[in-house]
Image (cartoon, rainbow, N blue to C red; front, top):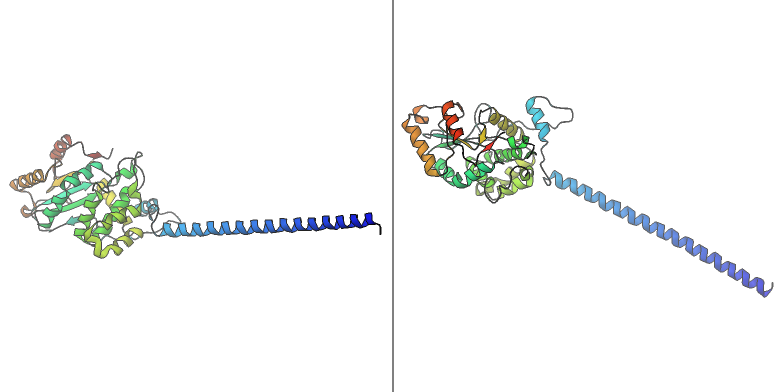
Length: 320
């Protein structure tokens, strides 16, 4: 073989070797890309499962399908709807379990509070009056009858389900004790936690309502049960029924306060509420006089209601 042919053969061999190496390099690159892609998909899958787990533990919104709850209450469930427990909190009363009468049932007076969880006027009222109300109920000066509406949920400017969700959380507190309920109401309406107003939906979040409960000393011993009741929608049906009770009460704005069945001008001070109690006693109303409670007769005096509406403070929230 000539020297020239030998050189060409060597060159051809080198070309084949380089081509084989490039081919192997491309295979290795493709393999690495496939491995990286598979790892990325695995990470995404794990993240997805973790997200689902967190959601199921209560993170991100409410665990309750409120549309399904409302259909259940209306007796019109749809296929695939979750069926929720239909039970009242341990310390609720009445044939329907919707009476929230807190304090000594034999107290001389009943003060009825009609409120909405997202109502700014209710928050202002509770912030100036809440501590005195708790103390007066504890001392037996009067008992408190609470009814909560959820008309903010139906307001296009507000929307969401935060009001019903908050009522269900109040039910979880009431399930612990009267004192826990009053403590939770006080905390929910406090300046620290009550940031909801039209257009705000922070009470849609179960986490928010659970966090509010962490600040209530009366819930501390039974906090796990309280949290479980929120996460598992234990009182969702009860909350929807409570909202219906409010809607059928004839009350058109919040806060509405009644003393022994008669609507009064929303008191600005504890002294104003005590003056209303004294007037009720002087007129022979009150529990000791056999008067009607607000739960029995919420529209006892239509003329008085009309006068009170005319004097309603700027803090009030209307269902309209």
